[in-house]
Structure formats: structure tokens, C-alpha cells
Image (tube, rainbow, N blue to C red; front, side, top):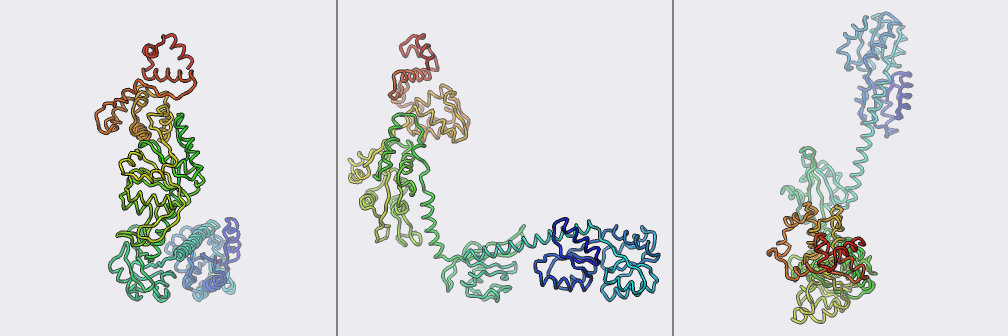
Length: 631
């Protein structure tokens, strides 16, 4: 910051310390100040902003100093104060001022406020300042205001007194704070540019930018290497002028997504994106992606996704049950988990076969390896073959460049879950049998065997032995899969788990459901329904109840639409379901505990009508009342 006199220098330094913003003060004016600032910036490039007043600011701006300049204004009060001080020194007062100052147009008004005349002596440079001092002397001026320390010497030589225009602390502080904001903005902007340059260069891809007139404004080192040009020679040139013919042709086609380029350094995809702000186009960013690297990266990412993403999300502890039959299944699954043998899980659709498979993997020594699940019924024969065993580059029409690893290869060191194994063709059965026997796979279109260490867990809702008998499933594969067997019971065989399952399923939807508080007709339906879709069907019903808020039996009838649940048939229960209305599924327990369960179930089934319950149980109402009290 420039200062025209020592008192202002001290004031600037004091304010700088007070507001904790460092300021370098240069005590000089006009061209002298400009020369000193230029020298200071050469020695200290960290200077971001210059603060100056009037004429000195004008001289600095002419010196080609590449820094923003802030004008430290004087307030009207600063002028009035300076002229009143001058009045105390002498009668005839002059004012040395730079001609570009904005207050000049209102100088007559200032004289009116003062009540005495102030003679104006404008100047534009140092020579004119000296001339105006001479003129003031001839005009018999007693006191000259302005001009700074350098002019003071000449004023005194002429026998006149001098007086400064003191800039108020408030104006100095305001100028310093504004300059600091600009300095911080410049620093932040440079950092962002440097970060952007680092990112662009680190990306490892050829990148270049053009402005709205299609002139090159940036060319990173990778672009230089791939296109064989020197960025210094082409910056500022049009693409055509830069002799980049292949790029120019692509640009003429107005490429926006991608365009394949055959360059000397390889095959690349040219992509571009417009750089705009509020619909104003500033230019375009272009990237060149090497096709070979894209293909390699795709293969690598695919493997990483399988290895890191396809993991078992559940353990056997996640199985919700209080049923002895289900507890036996879990106990058996835990025993199977510690082995490496193949497991065949059987059970109706929706019983939770994949959950058990994930649980076996999570309890096994392979738990840190991948868990890959494949639904064999969801893919055609050809797709299933390529999915299971992978394929080589060019194995068939539409095959991806570089080929693809199969799930057996990706599941190496872990487990593979083959759901609906009974649906695979004889061809796939033969190939799968070889993998199970030899522990190695061959990709489609390949000629090399790849060793794999994978545990197979298979599942089916079919009777595989019947399929063996009718010839649709290989007997040798059946025995290879059926080393360890788990049969998961349908929901109707562990109906006592419904309260726990429903509370858990509702909680997944953020609803705290109480089975005890549920309407009796609702509980009656859930206990007596046949559940052909098992736990999956129960989950669907719970989700619908959670969404619709239908917790009454009437709501259930309306919202669930039993005809859809039963395959769009009439709402007629199957014979075995109608029979189940008069049946209670009971686990073996102590006699008194079993009796309590029977009483509770029969009470629920008959809407707590004690007369009917007593009659059905063959006991008196008094006996029933006593037993209810013991519950």
C-alpha cells in the first residue's frame, strides 16, 4: 500500500496489526511509487494486491504491473477536516489534486460548505505538480493542501505552508479488507487451477480444451504424446491450423458422445463435453480413451465386482425361528458348514433356501472368500453355460472383447450357490459333473483347463430323485450333489414361527407390530392359511399391509385379494387347508406346556368364546377358567 506521508504510514501499520492483515507500506507518490512497487513485486512475487490513492494509482496503472489495484478513497469529511486545519495556518488556501478524482465535479459545493474559498490546482504528473506549486506561489497562496511529502519540500522553498489530506482510519481499514478479499480470491483461484492441472495430468488420458471459437487453449502431456505435437506450438491455433486432421474430421461431424479414431499410436475413442455457464458456451473439453485399455479395465472391474460385491449378506443367526424342526435344520447346517462337501438344499419355493446357503458359507472356512449365486432357471442354456464357465475372446457372436470369467472362476476360494438346479439341461449337467469331479473348468471357446477351488451349494424345489427316475436328471450328478442334504420345511409345518416372522418383517418396514394385539380373525387367517408361497408369500403380505395400513381382517380380504395369492382361483380353500382349521401344529414339549399352547390356540381359533372352547376341549367352563388363569 502506498503512503504519501509518514503519519499515514504509521496509521496503515497500526490498522494492519489491529485487523491482522499483513500490509507492506511504500512511502512514495506518483512515478516514484510506481517504480518502487515494481521493484518490490520483482523481489516479492507473493504480493497480490496494490492499494493506492488518486494520482499515484494512475501512475501505477500505467506501469504494466500485473496486479489488481484498489483505490483508497478519502471521505468528504477528510477533505473538510484538511481545509479547516489549513484555515488555521493561513488565509489564502490552495488544493493540489489529481485531475481524475471523482469529487472534482462538486468542488464548488465544497466551497459553499466551508464558507471560504479554496483555489484548485489540478495536475496529472510530477512535472505538472511542480508547475502548480509555482502558480500557487504567484497567486500568493499561504497554505497548499495535498501533494504529499515529496511536494512539501518545494512548497516550503517558496515560503508557503503545507498540509496533508489525512485518510480516515475507517477508509484505510475498508480498503485493506477489500484488498485482502481479492488477494484470497486470487490465491484460491490459482490453487483450483493448479488442482485442475494436476488432475488433468494425473488422469493418464489425453485431454485438450478449445474455446468458443474452437481455438486450442490447453493440451496436456498425454495428448502431446498420443497426437505427436508440441503444445507450445499449437496453443491458440484452430484444430485445423494445428494440423490435427483426424481430430478436425471428427469435430466436423459434431461428435458429442464418441467417435473411433485410428491414430498412429493406436485406436482411441474421442469424447467431448461442452463447457457452459447459464447457457453461455465457453468451450469444449475433449478426451481420448484408448480402446484396448477400456476393454482391459472392463474385465478387471467385472472381476472386482464379483469378488468384492458378491458376498454372503446373511448368517444362520439371521434365521427367525422358535420352532424345534427349524432349529434342527439350522443345527445341521452349522455342522455341514465346517466341511467342504457339496450340500443339496431342498424345499418349496419361498422357504429361504438361499438364506440357508449364505448362512452355510458365512459359518465356513471360506467365509472370507466370494459367495456367488446363480439362478439356473433364469438363463437360457447358452447364457447359463457362458455365465458358469466363462468364454474366450471371439467365442461367439456378441462375445465381449477380451472374453469373460465364469462364476466358477470368480468364486475361486469361496462358495457358489446354484439355485433351481433341477432346471438345467443334460448338456449343462454333464459339464457341471466334470467341474465337481475334476475341480477345473474350461471356458467356452477355450482350450485350457482352469483349476478352481469352489464349494458347491445347490438348491431345488423339485424332487430330484423322481427326475432321475424319469431320465431328466443324471443319476451320477444327483449323487455328487446329494452328499449332504438339508430339507427345509414349508411354513405350514412351522406355523408357530409366524408371530416372530411377522414382527421381524414389519420391523424391516419401520413398523413395530405386536402379534398379541393383532385382531383375532387376522391371527386366525395366518394360522389356518396353507401358505403355498411360504415365507416369501408371508413377506409379500406383510409388505402390502405395511404399505396400505390394512391390519384388519376386512382390509386383508380387500387388499391382498386371496384369489391372486391362490393363483387367480376362486376363494375356496384346499381340502387339506380346510382340515387344518381343526388342527394345531404342536412341537413336543413338557405336558403342561403343550396343554397351555393347546388352550391358547383353541381360544384364538374361537374368538375367546369360553363356552365353545370348553365344549371342544371336553372340559367344564370352571376348569377352563382355572387353566386360563395359569397361562
